[in-house]
Length: 226
Image (cartoon, rainbow, N blue to C red):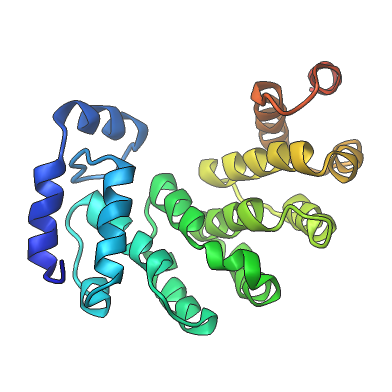
């Protein structure tokens, strides 16, 4: 599939009304939601990535799913890392929901093998002052940088973040809960001396308590720290 309108028709065909209602409830303020499931969009993205994907990426999305799909295509195309980052940079300012952000990040798997390049690329977004751009950088750190090499830098950057956006605070909380599961020693040490604002800290504890990968003993202690 190469034609933008042809792909739009395919997306419209896959729309489910019940799923539309479910999705719309999770996306306050987002318009033109069709209700297409993510696995179906990912399959279309793979097909687009094998064709004239350049043409698809310059198309103007109307539906929520079309923007989501463009992000998925960027993750699926076969290009060199630096070229992919050019497309990433063009897409990030268009992110308008947590769902587009998180789906986009999960598809940028090239980051795992190009860590220093991507790490440097992410830094300006943390200081952009824009909610979804900051969330993009935080979720990318969660997805690809919670390892022994970067964990100290990740924790330091999260501690310094100051933004009142709900989706930033939730991303930080989610990342810290994931970090506690993946890098428990460094993260637990950080949580004893953090400088998070009260709301972000409360959400962090909530995310940790909800996690199945964190011990009951840690959860008990965290509850007492709120």
